[in-house]
Amino acid sequence: MRIRAIKGIIKKDVKEICRERMVVFWIFIFPIMWMVLLGGIFSSEKAVEVDVGVFYKDEFSKHLVDVMDNITYKNHKLFNVKIYNSTDSGLKALNNGKIDAFIIFPKDFGKNITSGRQGVIYIYYDETDPQKYQLVKGVVKEFFMQVEERIKNKSMGIQMQYIDKFMNNKTFLKFMNFSNNFSVAKIKEYIVATNKPLIIEEKTINHKTSSIGFYVTSFIGIQFLFSAMFIVGLSILDEIEKGTLRRILSSPITAWDFLIGKYLSSLTIIFVSIVVGLLFSKIVFGETILPSIWGWYLIFIGSLFSMSLGLSIAMLTGSSKSTNTIIYLTSMPLLFLSGIVIPDTILPSWAKIFVDYFPIGRMIKDLRLLELNNIPVSNIIQDIIVLSIVTLAVVVVSVILYSKMINKI
Image 1: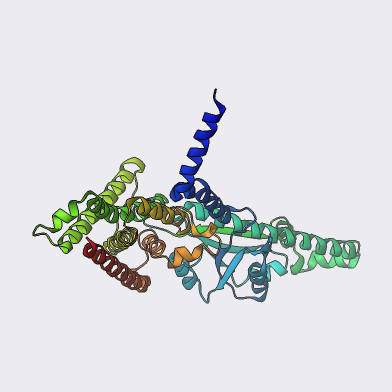
Image 2: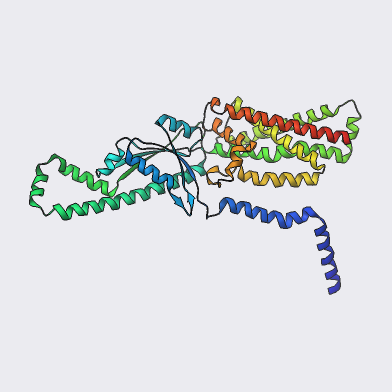
């Protein structure tokens, strides 16, 4: 074994790796970046913030809602409380995806609790996203378990005070036997309420499809971030690098004929792949979604936005290798941050920006609202208009960059 030869090979390989910036990036920078990203999302130190809608009519319920709105865990707020003036408005907000749960305190809730009786609470959840549903239900249920424990302890303390004060008083005992306010039935009612002061009635809102719909829409989002992002830009770069585009443009085919053809063929491939995925879900799981006209329109502009964004990146870099790297670097974090595979409820507040404002995240959220929550299109028509304008702007930018690349050729 020749040590000098081995050392020479090691030295040579290290120098070659250091000269390749992309190799250095994938070996050293990307793993650290990925660790920071996932650590920021799934860190156990961060509490989940749940958007809760409430409806109440009495002061005791208001006090309970104030406690909910101010409760924290490890310096992180647990609930973002929104108050509604009617049960219908709250249920509509839940169905439209504006809140994660809707809690109704009946008008006699405070009176029953403060008089030692059982109080009924109605809680509605959105079951469209199974992961989000279980998470939200767990957080809300844990809160009311703690409230119930406090009520039980308080009620027991009050009862003990009255027992010590009155149960040895013969006049009081005689009064109990004749007073309607202290019948045996009511005493039993108070005892039951001491053991179980809260009655939680949990309900879920109805949807056109079951929870498999969430994963089907996730599949569509993945198509946006990967297939659509890659297909047009890399295809044109491949034609450029092979020299075939120069020969194509010397024929009667114009640069614009070529671009439109690429767009239409790519859209066809993406739509066929989505249809195959929907059919696959039906065959394997027995369930799928059947997008409405507006649902297909959202899929269309989502595909068009992604293709144009990918084309813009390709035209700016002018290199297949660099385009691959940048698209992967962009798409992989967005897969988690834009609510495609991870419910936005468990995302930190800084990451929810991508769900609400990044076009692909917003498109998937609106698609779920439209197809899974069965909301009327009028509720999201403003989003659709804004997304259409943004998509058109990205298409224009990609066409300008493509034109500049053609002029160089």
